[in-house]
Length: 232
Image (cartoon, one colour):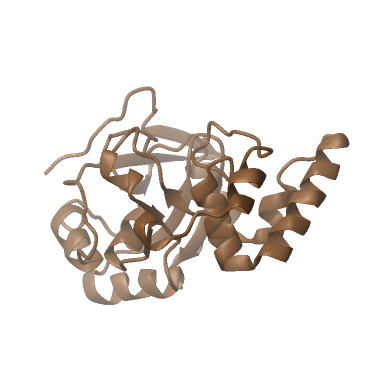
């Protein structure tokens, strides 16, 4: 078992006056319904040292929790097709310019709220403000992944929701494996700490700085685990 170095990503990063190594751990292609405790025991525990923090991709935990929504179970409405045409495309990943993600927003939030959010977002653009739509519809919509077959074709068939009770998952991981953990939603442009164990003392702002360049990568690296280790 050894660490992986992702292309164009530095292992070491400076945050304030401290240095941290972000060691990527490669796994197999994780399927829906696998067990995240088993994954941590198999891939992380042999490399873990006291004081480390494990950064986990939210997608992996969500897949283990079966937090997926299938295209075959959705009805794509004219409203989703219409509103998605006006949404901005983001290089960060799938957005509501995908009619499927827009449909998920409608199903989750209701049509009236989505229409109002779209109107507010349109007005905001006139004043150079972006992200209003996502602020209004919330993290369930913002954090939806999948519906995108370009990297992994199977992900074109379903959307992957954010994990349920991410902080609770981190506490469970520590109780069963002794590994301190956080769950992150990160890409090459943004990062969010969805949850962390009660024994992770660094602030969300500090943790975001440590992974500010998304050391896990955004393509087909299969490195959903990043082991963060403070350097002497």
